[in-house]
Structure formats: C-alpha cells, structure tokens
Image (cartoon, rainbow, N blue to C red; front, side, top):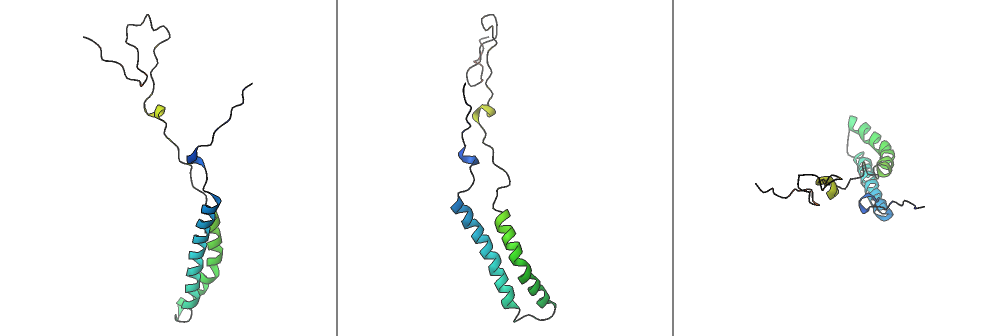
Length: 115
C-alpha cells in the first residue's frame, strides 16, 4: 500500500504568525490614531461636527478590531501555472509503428515534414 502525501507548495502557505501579527497591529494602530484625532478634534469643532466626532470615537474601536482580525486572511490562494498546462504534450498513438504521421516531440511540437 502506498500512502499519498501532498506536499505543501510555498505559494499556498499562509503568512507567518509574526507577519500576520504585525499587519494586525498596524491596522489597529492606524484606526486608534484616527480615533485619538477625533477625540482631540472635539475641543476645536462646533455644530454637527461634534456629533460626527463622538460617533467616530465610539464606533472606531469596534471597526478597528473587526478590520484587524478579519482582513488578515487572504481572499484567494494564488494558483501556480505549471509548464505542462501551458504547452500540452502530444503523445504518439499506441500503435506508432503503423502510423504515417511523424511522432511528436516531448515538448508537443512536431518535426518539420519533408515535401
């Protein structure tokens, strides 16, 4: 019995925990920086801008956590194009000795025919 083992391609591996954590911290810090600016802006703004700054300061912590945690996962795993998928290999028929057509080369190209 042979066990089929699938090897992990380097292009399908997720980001390292250190890189993922760093990305989340940057996203969260940017959102908290914007929140801090909203709180400081409360001192200087008047009218309906006060309501906008208060709502932003209250909503941004939740948004920051969601964006930092959910946005860390890639949308799709990139697929690697293999050379065999680009140039198909044309194999000769099983009874190659009886065929009048020249055999295909390994790259799928036929040799030039003599006229």
